[in-house]
Length: 80
Image (cartoon, rainbow, N blue to C red; front, side, top):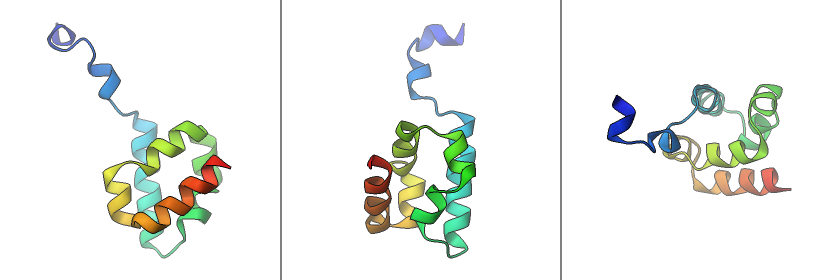
């Protein structure tokens, strides 16, 4: 019955895989690794499509953790 309140709520839910990868990216970046290197990790590549990687880089908590400049560089890398 809960979905009757908002039948489009599934559009705004994030997958648990994306949640785990976001936590991984933030953790690895806090350890001093560059974002471009982290995005090339098998852990990230095997779990997220290029579109999902772009969404990951748009998440507010990821942007706060890595900074806007490094985010732009990583997005350019994902697009190429």
